[in-house]
Amino acid sequence: MGRRKVLKAATAVTAGAAAAVPFGAAEASEVPPEVREGIPRGRRYRLRELGIVLGELPPGRHNAITDVPGVKVGYQTLIFDRPGPPPNMARTGVTIIVPRDEPLWRNYCYAGVHSHNGNGELTGAHWITESGWLTSNIGITNTHQVGIVRDTLVKLEAEQNEDLLWRLPVVAETWDGPLNQLNGFWITEEHVRRAVADAKGGLPAEGNVGGGTGMSFFGYKGGSGTSSRVVPYRGTGYTVGVFVQSNFGRPRDLRVNGAPVGAELPPPPPLGPGADKSQGSCIIIVATDAPMLPGQCRRLAERAGIGLGLVGGVASNGDGDIYLAFSTGNDVRAGETAPLRDAKAVDNDEIDPFFHAVVEATQEALLNSATKAERMTGNWGTREALPLDKLVEILKWHRLYPNGRE
Image: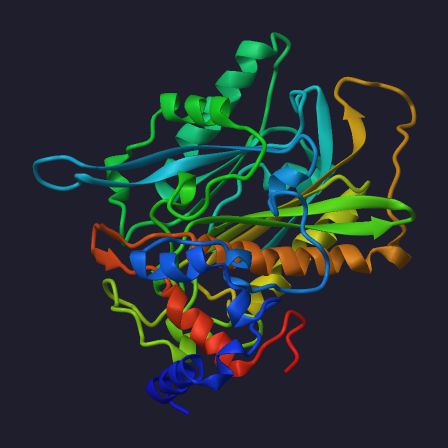
C-alpha cells in the first residue's frame, strides 16, 4: 500500500468508529486532550506523551540519562544570523555529560566504546579501549569544533587539579552542515565553560539544543534525545540511561515500534545534494549505575547499535555511528597504587536484561530527539519537523501495542 493510501486509511480510522484502536500503551481516547489539541498548534511532545511506548521495562523518574544517580547534562545552544556574506548562519552548540557528582579526575568510571561505522570522531577512545577507564566529562558538538571543546575540558581540569600532567578528554561529533555553516566556528571556549556550568539533573531539554541543534533525523529535524530503563537485579533496581545526538537515516527507512513510518509518510523536502543518503552519524552515550567491568560496558555500547537498527539506521558508509557506555557502579580512585583493586560486576549469565534496557532506551531516545525537535531553516534551506499527527495515525492504523504485537 502506498504512502497516500495508508494515510487515507489512517485518517478514516481516526474519523470512524474505530478511532479508539490502541496505539502504543494507550487508547486513542486516552491521549490527553491538551496533547491532541497541541499537535495542530505546533507543540512538540516526547514519545510517551503521545501514548507510544517501546519495550517492556519501566523508565526511570525522568525517562532520561540523568536518572542514573550523579549524571548531569548541560547545553549551550547557538542559533543566530549575522549580516554579510557567508558564513553567517549559526545552528549549532555543545552538549556536556557529567558522569559523577565528584570530579571524574578523582574517581574514574569503567567504560567501553564501540564503532558501528567509523566515519566520525570520539577523542580519547583509544585510551578507553586500552585501559577501560573514562577519565573526563563527555562533550558532543559539530564536526569542526571538536578541538575547542576538547581543549577547554583540559583547561577546566587544569584549573581544578594542580597535579594534572595529562588528560585525554572524550569529545564526539556529528555533522550539521545542511543547517549550520560549520566554517563560522561559532563555538568558543566560553560556550564550553557555560555548558559545563549548566550541567544538571532532572529532565534535559531535547530536540534543537546543544550539539544537536543543527542535526537531522531520517530527513526530518533531529537533535538531542534521551531515555532510561530500570532493570531489577537481585533485589536492586539499577538504571540504564541513554543520550543520543541523532543525525542519520534515509526518510523511507524510519520505523517506530515496527511500523514502516518512513515509507508511509509523505517524503520530506530534500536539503542539498545526496538527499536520499543517510544524513550522517549518530553518537550514543549509555550510562548505568549497575556495576560493570570495561568489557561489559563495551557490550552495552554494542547493543546501542541494535536500537539504532530497529528505528531504521544501517550505519551507512558516511556515518560516524560511535557509542560509549560507562558504569558508575564501582569507584576507580585516581592515584591509588594498591596492588589489587576491588571491583563488583553483574554476572554475565544475568546481563541480558541490561542489554534489553539499552536497546529499548536507545530507540526511545532517538525518537524523542525527533518528536521534540522543531522545524528549522538554515544553511541549505528548511528541515521540517517529524509530523506528529501523521505518526500517530500510522501507528493507530497498524494497531501496534507496546510490545510490538498486533
